[in-house]
Image 1 (cartoon, rainbow over the protein chains, first blue to last red):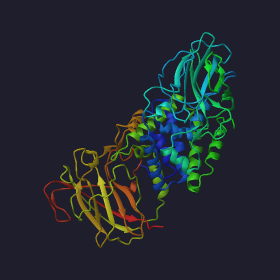
Image 2: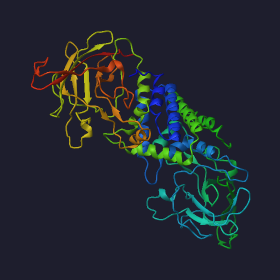
Image 3: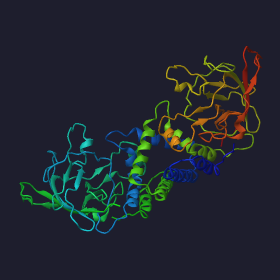
Image 4: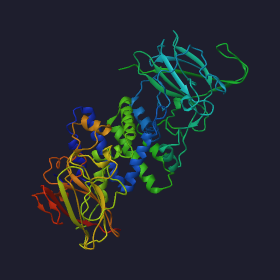
Length: 287
Length: 287
């Protein structure tokens, strides 16, 4: 039995975890213990402060549901998600840069034919999105799966709208033989991340705003390549410089170009003004 | 708009938190961001690993209830609680050493007269606990509030027993004019911390056992003094050297002495063998 003190306890805890059979888990826990203890020694929390931290984490866990992931929001707003992203994407030339997945991805979104309109009648400025998917080396990829999702004109995702029973602003496409895709939707808006929970409390206490600049999410999968998770951001958005989750990269910003009424490239007759976004994606070869 | 990378993102996040009005909160968040980012750079988690961490924390929050605090268990088993304890208790001579509060403390336990039996008929070896409360300088403290709680003979606290409607192995006493207290109960047992949740999963993955050596919790409050939170551990317990929460200190271990049937010090006639624990507590003056 040893009398542990504030200096000796860290090695004692590391020793206790020393029999962890999985070497990767052993390494992760050891690093966690060292950094957690260093953090505690650095800030010297009072009991009341430590209790506040426990309560903050508890509320964060209890805020999570099928359609809300508050720990991902916490990771995002602390810059940890983009750091994990950067570490996992040391990319070759020609590969599109990545950004956060975010909390609104839904598995098994409806698969739709090229050219379909995913807006499902949600009001807003019509937007034609088109592009290509290629390997980083330039070879076009046919049959790549292009999952897309974005907010409505008020900044809400379909899963945030309690009355809505179907997918909207969300769909899955496959590139054609030339690696091309296109679909119709509506112009997304900048929006606050959900800020009625502990993460919102943290942002308020720090005088940080909760906004993300307008963007369309893409998850693109093709055999022999790493799945690409990214956004394309709307040029000119007021929050490009202060994205609440630190997700913006210059290469991911594009004009969502305003167009006058007339005939769109796919032959659709437009009676109102509409917008046009084009982006060509490059996927990193796997392995 | 800056293209943040794995090296520049930390300063960008710190800058974003730079307007936090409360200087203490600003310091804590800055330290958290630095240590969290250093941890991520150290372990270089894959997306799947980061997702596992998010899921672990989510399950930890969702395991919490009125009678279960899984984040306290996590803090305890990572040695963080005892580290916070050590930092907050740089004690003068004569002051009793402290240890973790643990997750089973209940506010407003029933106040009982000195000599009462808190076992409430729970089976086990009878135990007489007596002691004194003094200021670290030696002056006895009359009217100090002595909150006690401990496990039953099977290692369970009253709040863990779903059928039980009343407090058991739990009570609150006031010291007499000479700073003395005594009460009857039953001998507590070593026990596993609740290990059917994420913290239990962590211990299993690390080949750590979940046991704590047998002990009685004390929380002792007196005007003009810091409230003392501690345990007294039973000498000879097989888990004194490997307490799952790192809470044992030599000065807190005492014999729970076995006694033959006969008359106890308070005059109670004992027909069976019983045990006797004596401990004199010293409280640190406040401020």
